Image 1 (cartoon, each protein chain N blue to C red):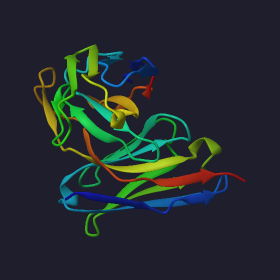
Image 2 (cartoon, rainbow over the protein chains, first blue to last red; image 1 turned 180 degrees about the vertical axis):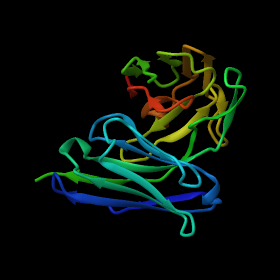
Image 3 (tube, rainbow over the protein chains, first blue to last red; image 1 turned 120 degrees about the vertical axis):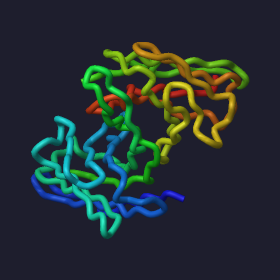
Image 4 (cartoon, chains in turn blue, red; image 1 turned 60 degrees about the horizontal axis):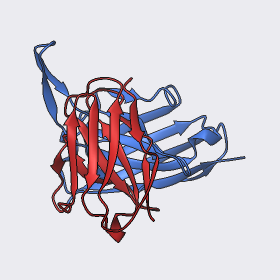
Length: 131
Length: 107
């Protein structure tokens, strides 16, 4: 059974830093991309970042680009999110989410392109940015 | 970036009612859209993917349809345990995005 468990949340001051971790089990971590998704208090869901299965490529939401870094350790089956220069707007529950590893055939490109399908979610860890 | 317009933002219905939620992407996402259920204090739960395919274990009163620029989520007969917020999400391209959510309440 696939299991994702986030940790590392807590209180952080604006301009500080925090590293979130996501321990995974029940699947071959090194063969799947991973996402972070967040949800501010009383707000909807916001995709934050994605990393390829081998760590060779990362993508970020504009709201966190240049401040947050997604990374992974495939030998320890662990995903990370390093948050720097957080602001109160980054206060949220942060979810670790497994990508489904699916593709579709892109006729325009003449090849297969990735889908960013999220199939398993962790329970989340809460980050509060406040002075 | 593809925006998802989800409506209504809230919905009050009686037990046994049929309810429908709409999700309209700003660009064609083919069939690549999911629906999630989220209860307070819990992580989202994937109910439907590829527009209409139910996740294993999801009751058959839930269904989805649509493609391209218009999708629909339906609960055929509302049950007490269905009270939650529902989100659509596309996964066709980066960034994947979510609808604003529909909060479902009992009338």
